[in-house]
Length: 273
Image (cartoon, rainbow, N blue to C red):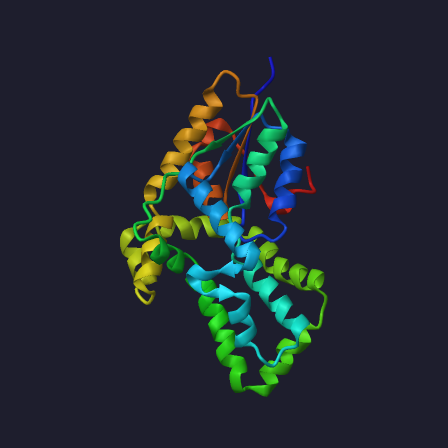
């Protein structure tokens, strides 16, 4: 009788190389069940948002080609286009579900299962604004800095003189550093499950962003995901289960399902299998 295998794969939701890394891992491990940190409701929402972002930007939060071009008038056309690509790429999330779904569709013996709780968004536009607020704030800070500072303008021009592949590679280096700190990410996530610690942490944020952070750090998320992983692992047809979760959930989930002896990896390990 084959021994069951269980892998917990930690991802960075903004990993530019995430899709190809996850695809590589799934193809090498050949799971017959892929459990993903997402709810069915959020799959549809993330696909809709991703399509909007990759087409022309997302009007809901004011990131469009026209507005990016207006914000950096001192850049030439090629540099503006690179700025737009970098900005939009940084906002696209949800590749984990898309890649897992494609894997399941190409492998008849496999299935994808959503294991996270649903987010009650309320006002959808307000939720999206809160979700993307850190990115928008970062972009606005860059706009403010380069408005009148000629030295800052020249630095940005020099940076954007590199080809887009090099720029995307530079952006991915910071993400790889985060993978090496998976355990610390988990400890911080666990700390912020305490409502008092979380409220202290988010007190300076807008109300929209506060609401998003409260949903992200909901205690029920890890508890629900651990229960669903345990249930899937116990099913008769389970041979290899791969659970794809955000980096901050990796170690907290490991603690909750320790008895199942999960093998931990991050997407940075895609070439080590």
